[in-house]
Image (cartoon, rainbow, N blue to C red; front, side):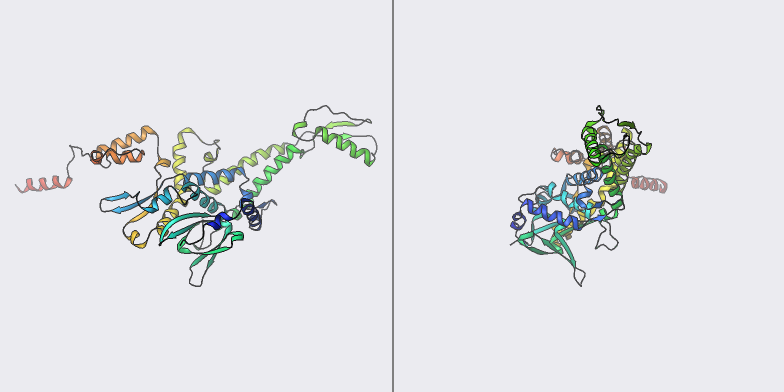
Length: 408
């Protein structure tokens, strides 16, 4: 019998889930200094936030995740272990590993928490299920041990032990309750939203009037409303510019030039892209801002992105997966889980082949190891042979020969 009835997850309709999420999203929102309410979902409406969340979650979710075992001869990849298929290929009957890992990363980026439930069969992990943070309530007992209440809507709720829940966390001062990133950065995200709305309203209605219509004397309310409506209908909005204006009763139109401050809106929006990228620790070039990027520094930018951004989420995931998915005996036997980062850290082809050649020549890599890093199949036992330069000998032998010569 599993930890929970997986039919509960499938029972709620899509509309029901969306309605519940909208209520929970509004409840968890905060008001920025610009007056815009910011929540997890409204934050994603900012293009820079969406791009940062997408690039981080996609990059991590597409990395191969493998089971390894440490032996006397080094580490070996164990593809036959049942956990390997769960984390590498298929979380459960309905969810591939990519779509299981990505929601957890998205949630931790926007809420500070990311959850993956473990369903077990005979004590062994049998299925993994990503869970929306909005559906989880974390409780801590007097002994300091957490448990998690997971709400399935009409199907009720269940309590999940900490041994059956993988909990990712953002930055925290106590290791128990992480900060909510969106609430911390609400002002910057709210300013981005406000700038977008300002620009939209500027093109839709014209935040600054383009001109003034002058009439002689006072107008009756009916005449005023008719003139105002006719001008707005004929000339208001982006698609009605540069049309001929017809006026009546001696009305006169005078043009007003837009103040130069309006041009600063574009600069403000460009700055907010950098500000959001800084918050997520993402190089601007990763979210398609190439203003400061050069082709010569892109490789270094990729390394910086992996080391300074992705590793913040990759390392804890490796440790949590190892801790939660293996039995104690397996962990003592040297089993662990690790992401393969070779694809992200891979340099240019010419540089890779030069380093492989040096490693092969000096004897610390064999053909099969090199081919594995290039995601190629091995060539059998002959590929396991290491080379040794013939002009190199053990330095201790030189010392021994020198000491023997001195004795003679």
